[in-house]
Every structure is written in structure tokens, then in C-alpha cells.
Image (cartoon, rainbow, N blue to C red; front, side, top):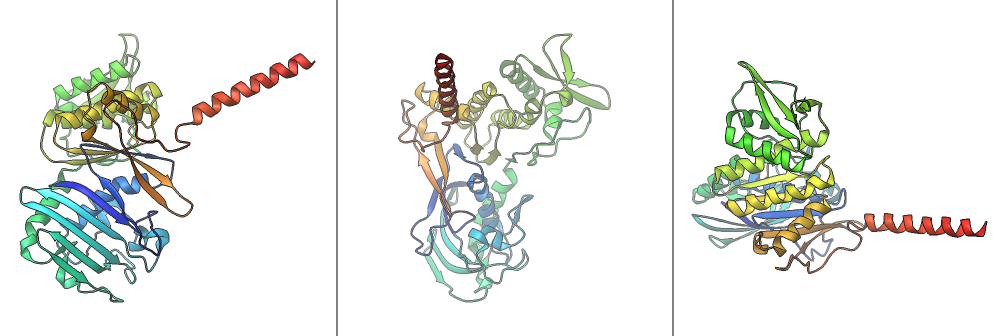
Length: 398
């Protein structure tokens, strides 16, 4: 299954107002990048596909589970409505494709009365354009005909294959959050389980895959000031070390936060590339966390390689100017096909946020750019120049 696009309204900070005038649209490409100011709603957008996949995969009357694959979306359904609006009606349009066909669903939820995760919202209105035409309007105060649905799909067994497809995509997803686990000084020799949002299992994956460990070690050496990552092993445990020479070596747990925090991200990207598997949908938040700006642009190259070498999709939420500039450069150089890339700016307004696409042309130019974004450096330099001129004028007047 592939999620082609998601449209949404009255979700978190995204609210068109009483007029229901418009939906925010997220087209999902092999590499989809979200940027914007803090608390603008970037993470809410990045995680939305996981929330909706949980609804498509749901096999009971919960309609929209509030915890999917270990990710909690709130204590109750008021947490997904703008401002916790009791009468809010979050609306979602989902377009997905699969070997079994095409799925197009448009659903509005009625959350009044849904006070806990065990007490599901009702379906206010429902439209399915594909694979069959189905329209249901349920303007009821309570839950509506929950018995007609299992999750976001009709209870008819004909939709069980779509539920299975959604569950399979969830099971294959990797979500790496903005806070990764610190590196331990030593690890016992255990089997690799799976990536979690904190990346705790990345060291075990390196221990069991020499090719992957070699790629990650070389990336460290090339992009992190010559520090090469390697594994120090004994019979019962192993440790991660970085070294520039025989005399310059240290346990990774004692190194800077940037070198530790980036490990799950780099490991995850090379892991995807080596596996070369089909459909997947991964989410990575702030991959550049704690990294020096010089190392942030090379991270973009890793995601570009994954987008060009695999058939999966990755959603990246970033605050890095260097990351975005590297995307432009690689498009201009012909390394990255702009059709395999989507760039979105999340703009905070007075009482809501808006999602706006920014197109990178084939020559690397942008069709538009949000005012004030990444202008901090320019403003700081301008302030320095003003201070220098003022000091010079003051010195001459004495």
C-alpha cells in the first residue's frame, strides 16, 4: 500500500474556521520534507499518516485509535481537535493505492461524547469514491452507526484486504522521533528487534550487519570531522567507539550529543538502502538534532539516496537551512528528480496554521519562499554592521 495524499481540516492547529472553506493537502513523495517555525504544527502533519493508517487498519469499533504503533496522539479525542473543541468535526481525505486497487475516503468525525480512547467518536459524514461509491450522512448527537464501520472502513468483509494492507504498512514503518536515546557505554549481545522512535536498537543492528556498520562508520569519518565509528567486541558485549587515530579514540557514549543523536538516523537510512524493499512509509523528525551545520547538508544526501534507490517514502521534519539548500543543489545538479520530492512550509497564522507547498524547479530555483524564514543570519550580520558603523561614528566624534 502507498499513501498518495492526505487532506485534512479541523485537526490540531489546522482549522479553516466555521465556513469549512478549505482542506490542507499533503502529497506524499519518495522524499517529503516539512519545515517551519517551532510549534507551527510540523510534527502533527508528519505523524498524521500514522494516525490515519491506524484507522484504516482498525478491526473494531474504535473508528480512529489514539495510539498507533506505540505513538500516542492524545489522552482523548479532544486532543486532535483545534483547541480541544468539543463540537469539532475533524475531516480527513485519504487517497491510497495498492495491488488490489485504489482507495479514496472522505470522512468527518463527531467527537462530542468521545471523552476517552475507549469511547470512540462517531462518523458525521462519510464518502468513499473508490473502490465503490458510498455516501453516509450521520448528523447525530451521539456516535452514529458504529456497527456499520470497523475503523475508518465499512464493516463489510470486502474491505478486509484494505485493512490488512494498512496493517502491513504500519508494521513496516519506522518512526524516529526528535529525542533519541543516549548511547550506552556497552551493550550486551542481543538480537536486533526493530527501530523504535528513540532509536535504541540501532547499535544492535550494526553489530549484526557488518556491511551496514562499514557504511555508517565511513559516513561518520567523511562528515563528522574525520571521526570514524567502529565496534569494539568481546564474547558477551560490544561498545561503539569513534577514532581519528590510534591516540585519538573514545567511547561514543562520551562524545558530543550530535554524534550520538545522529546514529539512529544514519543507520536507518543505510538500512533502508541495503534492504531495497518495496513500499514503506517512514517518519524522521529533526534528523539534524545537535549536529554542527556543516554535517546537516550531508544528511540530506542520505535521504536523497534512499528516495532514489528504493520505492518507499520518507517524511522528514526539519529546521535545517543546510538540509534544504542541499536538496536544491542536488536537484540543480540533476542528482535528485524534483518529481520525487515534495517540500512544505507550515505557516503559523494568528489562530491556526496552514500547509503550503514549495516547488523546487529543475534548475534548483524555488517557485516561492516564505517571508522571514532563515533570515536570522542576514539580520544578525546587518545588526553587526550597524553597531560597527555606530561605533565608528562615535569614535570620530570624540
